[in-house]
Image (tube, rainbow, N blue to C red; front, side, top):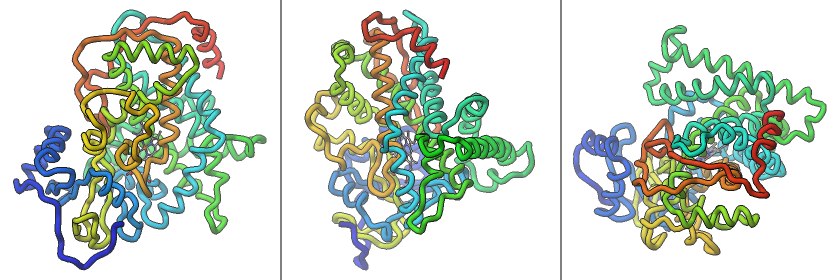
Amino acid sequence: MTTATTEPVHLPPGPRAPKALQGLAMLVARHGAFAALARRYGSAFTVNIPVFGQMVVVSSPTDVKELFSSSRDLVGRPTNNLGDVLGSGSTFALDGDELHARRRLLLPPFHGKGMRSYETITEEEVLREIATWPEGREFQTLEPMMRISLNTILRAVFGAAGAELEELRTLMPVAVEFGSKIALMPAAVRRDLGPWSPGGRFAQYRRRMDQLIASLIADARSDPNFEERQDVLTLLLQARYEDGSPISDTHIADELLTLLVAGHETTSAQLSWAIERIRRHPELLERLAAEVDAGGSELRQATISEVQRTRPVLTAALRRTRTRIKLGEWVIPEDTTVMASIQLALAAEGNFPDADVFNPDRFIGAPASPFAFIPFGGGMMRCVGASFATMEMDVALRTMLRELRFEPTNAPGERRHTRGVSIAPGRGGRAVVHRRKTAASTGSQAVSAAERA
Ligand code: HEM
């Protein structure tokens, strides 16, 4: 267990190159640089890079477990611009007891009976999207997956419908892309210095998003079925802290945007990787289609886990020490960033034998250790939307495999491309599909049902 200590600092080994040079290596080849450092120094090492300064990187299940189980008095959230950009009510701006209290309210909506209705929404959105896909011609799946995950979040999380849904569909991608760019800029550039400044432009987007969210909140409150509604927005309006107080409307707005920013690009990039991976494994493709036809799900779920393991879209879970701590054999000073490397934990031979091989069967009947299989991070900051994302990926893949036959390919795997927050397939997860005519496929009928929704 991590403890506070007064012992002398004892950091894991690491490169001695100047900070700027180490930073450059990370920038040019983040993935390769981390893999090379792990080969040289083992599962724990220290790097020194611009912005983060001295950063301890851990990846063995014992160190990861200790880090994720650390008390919130010892370890907290590193400073991040996302919190500033999304607002003081965003999870990304909260830490310690405040974060703990918020997460107690935020997690139930993602595990409750709403999940069934979210499944229906996801399936409708997938059917609507794939109805437009060309047959027999290569196209990239990343943008379509982005539309599926955006629409699913807007309907399931924001409870949006009608004109508000239509406006949010177009406003959100532009605003989120712009917001993630300015989140990387220094605070001075993010300030609102009039409509032509970057900060001013973002403030305009934000005002419009806030108006739309305020109107969704008003719609939900005046809905005669308020008590029965299952969208996350309504569940957050109904939620109460331990002292009986509600989450304020402005905090709900910040939180909804947070869920969209955290959940939109990550899920779509992961789905696009799923297509990229399964097309390169023809036998698996056949088994997956046969399983869907037989109404099964085990192999599909194992495949999603293996896609997440071999092509994680987020590669790090970051914490900051509040005091000098002892973690494993290391003594780490106060105010130091500690990274649980998702990339290294998922690629470690000790955690996953033949780690380089894409083999979904490794997960069948053998659930992985929660401190080795960490695509959603862990502990007090574990991904709030993990079950939602897992459901969404499963339903999306199930629906696509039921309705479409994916052509296998022997083209080399797509390279990793960092875009905004997540790592996506460099060529957009290309696919060639043909429509299937099976007893289970719903085809155009279901599409019109989705359109009516
Ligand atoms: C495949 C899809 C996704 C992946 C791989 C993913 C992964 C992650 C990871 C690695 C973290 C950091 C965890 C940590 O520091 O321990 C995180 C945080 C978070 N995720 Fe996800 N995520 C996904 C989808 C979603 C979805 C769909 C939502 C919401 C609808 C969501 C909401 C959040 C939030 C709010 C946080 C911040 C939690 C906190 O700091 O307390 N994510 N996610």
